[in-house]
Length: 115
Image (cartoon, rainbow, N blue to C red; front, side, top):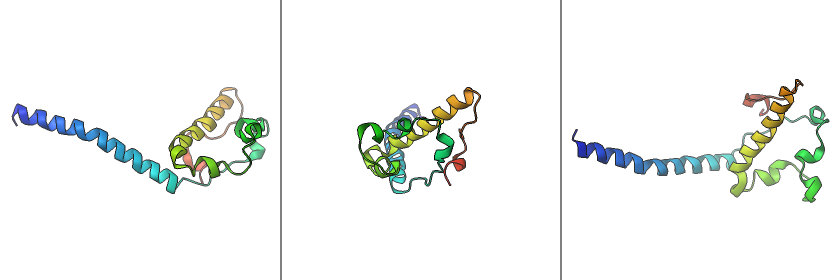
């Protein structure tokens, strides 16, 4: 293969990568909004030492009650970001709890939260 053809091939691949990344991101976002992985098993009794307002911000800003899903997962503009934030929020608390030597929730196994 000539040097010019190699450069053209590299250029084509380099130009195609951002488009492919965008398509994958959009496909993932659609999947999150249309088919979120639910339900999440959450036992309030296991979290009674945690102040309610740590999770339920609506206690503070009075936005009302209801499941987190109703606002945070059904709004397409924030659905992908919220999935990451929920995972970070829960996992960070579980890591802190485990590091403190206490029993904690799952850290990596999806099926332990999502049933």
